[in-house]
Image (spheres, rainbow, N blue to C red):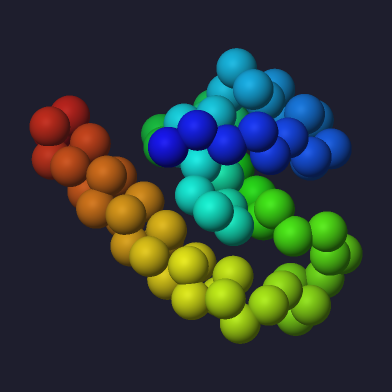
Length: 81
């Protein structure tokens, strides 16, 4: 899945080099400064300035995205212990 979404927040956190995965409405980026294991940046693609302004469609996809992040981090923690 290839997208060209690259907003200012993403650029601030090193995109496109730090992009782990892009969805239709969200991007997951590796946090350049890893303060804790698995620190990520989750960025919405919609041009809004408040979380409450996101569309219902973005919130629906957010459920999928956070579920996949949880699964990946659980696998990481199991393999590192």
